[in-house]
Length: 266
Image (cartoon, rainbow, N blue to C red; front, side, top):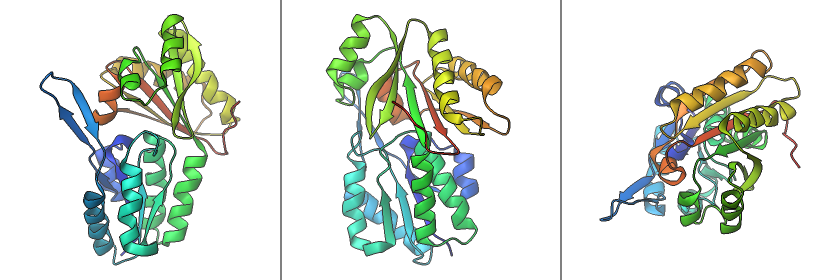
């Protein structure tokens, strides 16, 4: 038996990796209205209680590390905390304060340790360390979906719109903030590469490029990163989960990077 790792679908963890590392992925909900508009819903305490109970049974009560989308971006985290209370200290809900494959990478790191026989404390510590060493950026063609859902402040959205810029957002303390303004996609991707290199400090990184129906753009930034990142860096390209894509809109590209040391940003 081993510690079980649970993550929600917004991490965009590839099914092949989840299967290989025996990570449980819980799907968030996408709903369609009569007006053909999409909305999303987090997981409920009841759903999470049932999921954690199943994983504890599978792991022989060795414990569960649960990693979910930042609490400022989804109700799932608070539901997870409520659900974990049923199990005492056996279910550890990590306050990720991030999104995308930064969460997925933390799950991968914790699951790798779990397979090697690490205990619950060690797996939780590895997940937290991975998140602390990560950063996530988002490049968008339009901001309306995030603004309407309340995940992006009206001021930030208005600033980018009035300046007719191609904004680069960063997830910071669980919230989306403006990291850079550029005029073109080419300049935006070059700036993203610069931001990564500034924190890489010539050490290899794990980088995951995710996209909403924008494979060519994702491959473009992956190619740029491949040319400038230190050797032994890993680069992954995957689509966004449908819940994330419902808010970003088509054409969005996300970049999550795990560094060798804590990244420093202004």
